[in-house]
Image 1 (cartoon, rainbow, N blue to C red):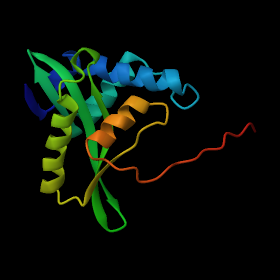
Image 2 (cartoon, rainbow, N blue to C red):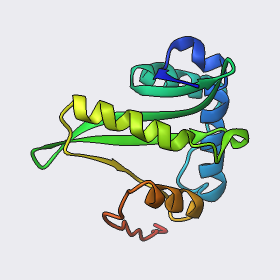
Image 3 (cartoon, rainbow, N blue to C red):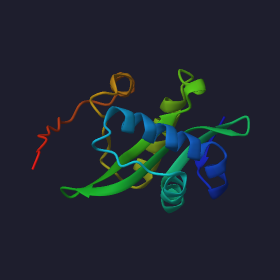
Image 4 (cartoon, rainbow, N blue to C red):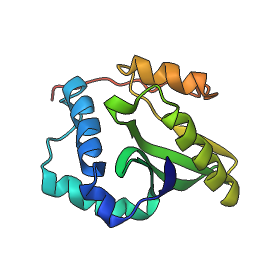
Length: 148
């Protein structure tokens, strides 16, 4: 297993497939929130974010990835995990824990005071895993749909 920064070649080595799978999962659960995209748009998004993606590669194939960014929040630097997914066939092997440990190192290098991520309410499995990895619920976002 190798954890490293992503490169453009990774897009065709399962990174695009995982990104599309992640989108489909969210779209299927919240179609009113996520706009349907196509492969070309997904590829471009990955190209645009390639410098902020880490991957886990094993046996020549990308098994997991995380997209992150650094943000300034109330005079503090925060490393924010935008997207994270582990290939369905590779779950429960500790890959997410390895990604988070790698992200902790990046956060330390960037002098971030904390690491944050968001998780949709429908994604109960992810919430349980994040809490198992030490994340604590910070806040709840409420929404009110309007029909005008």
